[in-house]
Length: 125
Image (cartoon, rainbow, N blue to C red; front, side, top):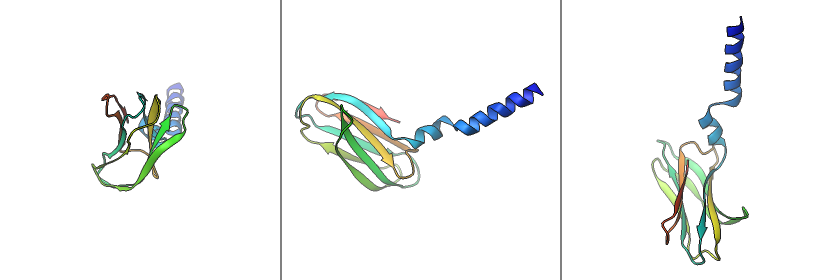
């Protein structure tokens, strides 16, 4: 009786919480933050690792206060394809991060933020 109760409780907890990848797929992917210098070139790429197109992939650059400073939308990201955006000559010294979202969640998406001049990079999974 105790074992059945414990098994039922465990199963209920798993169903309630969901698998780790299901929870991760719900929120945005975030790469960074990385430090940049005035005038650096910053890139952020979203990559579709699935066999189906992902619609409306939104890529946003955020500053160290969380404000959106640039970005764009990839309307339809084909299987195994990438789309990216660049800030040429970012202003000031500070930190930048990249946030990637999509209409139906981020499962199957990966992202990379890079400071071109220094080679510094951060991945989002």
